[in-house]
Length: 303
Image (cartoon, rainbow, N blue to C red; front, side, top):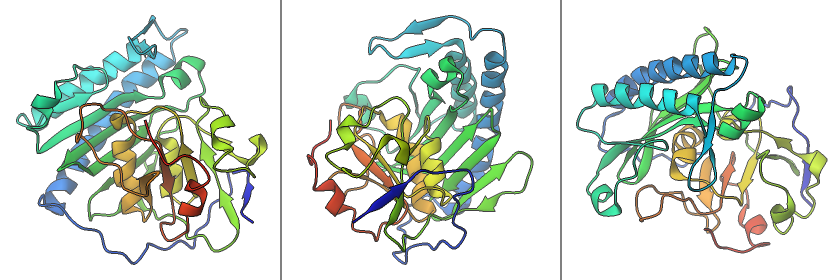
């Protein structure tokens, strides 16, 4: 019987191990990616400072709604402009796909071998509701895989970053970067985190033992960062997400020893279809655990 328990601030397991399965590196060198990720960290922090400035105003400015009914704020647009302009200057020949920019046709996107994938403000609803649980996501995708990822929380001043075959790291404030690894499950306790914005009803067929009090509800891609640093084991997502919501986190959690998988057990891929919507997925810390036994309880289909 799998048991679940609520996550608390001190529920961090230090004795974590990276799975023995080696990572496959892309044609872009780790040295080149490390140089890019250093600049991306500065870009994310610059965008984060502007988001924080707007957040700390008495109001958050005007809120409008896009065609899909998701909210759009002044902070989304300000962060988008900062990141888009900086990435265009950094790599003029590499396309930038941002949630708040234009979505090129798939015929055009099919020609891309690499591109930047950006969510300028992941967790806009959290921003509006003033939970503080929002972040900046910057990823580079090469041959349908996320090979660089940066997640930055402006209010907490917490940064997660990784590049393929270069390891994953966390930075708190002005402290030095610390390598992070996921938690190896060695008991029947699984620590679960999930979204604030999606109820548990759809999770019951996968996790019948799970109760409302047994999980940590957390906004944005910070859930993936939590798993990457060993603070949780499982994040199941059966609600809508887009590729810019997951790419940065997928690189980070993979480099930390975990995985982000669809409900058929396959790693999420990017820019391989017309839609930018993700399938249902799970973010996991320990890929050696028998997660398929959980997935088989529900429907093996995505969106």
